[in-house]
Length: 471
Ligand code: HEM
Image 1: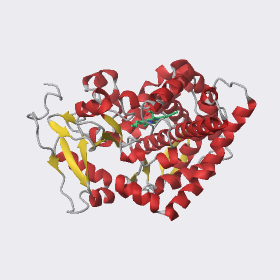
Image 2: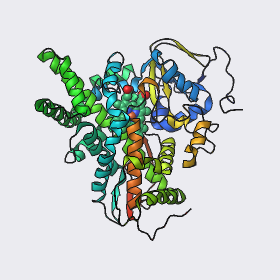
Image 3: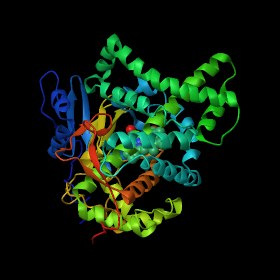
Image 4: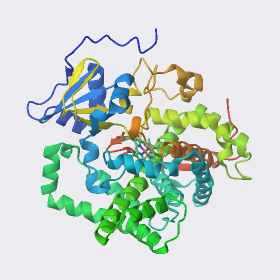
């Protein structure tokens, strides 16, 4: 019997299980106090669990086939949920937050930047920047790994997609993004919350101050490129030139400049924040599992030789030789999926596994939850990269693993993220063993993304031949 058939049968028009809650606020207090814990508790209560947040209902789905139903099979019945809509004051109508037909048109325009050939060309930029960044590291140094990964992935995405060097701005821009993420308030994601948010002038001022740091950078990039009038053959040129073609008046131009800003800012933030988090958690897990770390070191040493005297940088052609590295990165994203939950809003009535989902209801799917279902992932809390051996992957149903979402809203940067994750992980692991600082206790901070709370202090240990791979 497959794991799928093991699901409890659900008769037609089943009532969903209700999550207990406060008479007025519903599940909001429990979710605000501990979003991940509350979601895990809810997921154990049934296949589809209804949560009330004040006066709106949200259905939490956990099974792969239900996730697939919402993200793929019946995606037309859904728009992005309140959580992503609440990002519109920051991201505007960029790819992550817009809806069809705008989304369909923009996705078609942006997609070529993520075709295989283009991605391959980014590999050298990634390893060159990694090499430069590692030259600033020292044996025995203590630093915040999350901050380091943010800085590195930020300069990489800016160079690959927009052909600009943001290393000077990285610190200030990174801080602005961190502040904006921390300002995000789960209490304010429903319709009422958004209304209250609009009235909160102090918060709006604070947000706009941070946003200005990002806008100054993004508009400068767009205007410079437009003034140059030269096609760099990169994504920034594609966006700027496409916007220009559509503008027939100065007013159109201003509007389209705003849309260009939304797209560039979305790709800039989405293109580094999540990858940085995934890498940070990967090194955390490696520091806790020396046997996995040793196998990873053996793989990269076989490709690159003596860590003390690296002869060359990794390239696109090395990726097939980094199979264990891929598994390690995949397993880290199973346990700590950077985009840990996403929501949808039903714009039409739907029925899922016998439960009727009325128009206007919210639906939540969480890789954090589904990636821990025991019938799909035995001993779910155990870090075991070989779960991602190809034959194991084939045994699991689609959407047992979905760190990049699915369907027409699937992460556009997924191929980029896999390549970057593998190359950075291998390059760093070849030269340094990353140990979490003594006394550090990992704490998850489930905001929009799953960051480590208060960063991740680590101590760097330069590798040499005296630390041979085991196993
Ligand atoms: C480990 C790294 C990454 C993870 C875990 C991740 C995860 C996700 C997820 C789950 C979604 C779908 C959200 C939803 O359905 O509501 C998404 C969308 C998106 N991601 Fe990523 N992402 C990563 C890296 C990247 C990179 C490198 C880029 C760009 C260079 C990127 C750009 C985007 C964009 C633009 C969207 C919106 C796509 C659309 O709706 O058409 N992401 N990402």
